Length: 382
Image (tube, rainbow, N blue to C red; front, side, top):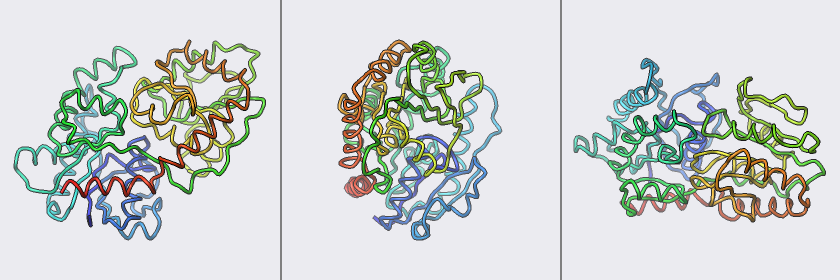
């Protein structure tokens, strides 16, 4: 394996999101394994994307960056899908001259739509193309009727078509693999590969739980993330309950609660600052209605936190009664009940789950272990 094309809908920190963080780590560790990477991406930040300073000088020797502009000309219903199709056409035009030089092409989301379609139709010859749609959230439970309509009438059909046309389909595992087989993907086409964390970001020890439990929510505001249900749970907790809650991410002002126990930190892109803040906390809450394999859970556990999460996507690979609380559903009542249980629990019980969470990261979920496994699975395709 000498050369891979990594076609993305952006990489962190130039574009925020779980898929973008995953793409960043793929690129980083492909390069560390001396794989030449042609990276197709775009910028939605104020950072200078041309310098790629998020990678080391040695890593940059193996990364050839193709910077495109994500189209924004389509407006109205379905605009993101239309613009994504246009972006995939820009990618196709950019990559077409180099197609025969790759050993494998890894595409994220809709970014490889046109390319996958052209190969499926027999219009081009190239190596195998794999696709990853993160958590296939459009086939998971919708948080509201509007989201359900978007899933049914907008997203499911093109996602299914792209997935079935691709040579290889990547899954985090868990319930995501079940979704893939249900929509008709043969098990022979599925490569299960979880996400991970950098080995050097793992804390050595957990922070012992203090008298006041510190909870944290990490992420942008999005309906499927369950912020509304979490807010209702927080509002219904006893006014005399002793806890502290941290929101990290761009939460709209009209979704903020006025309570001295709740702190809003806004968006934090700098890794060291984010990790230092996480390490002051005890429990991450991830009450999503749908997910892939949330980076926020991986990051929290690697910083010594245990987790409350809903059983969606591949969260069950990370969260159990040994490492936290895996909830069947993320209603405000269920969240409140779980938080109350933790607030009054024995601190050693909490410490044990935090230690287990950290141990699980060290044993199974570091990129240093995962990337060689992924490369071996890709090599076996040829």
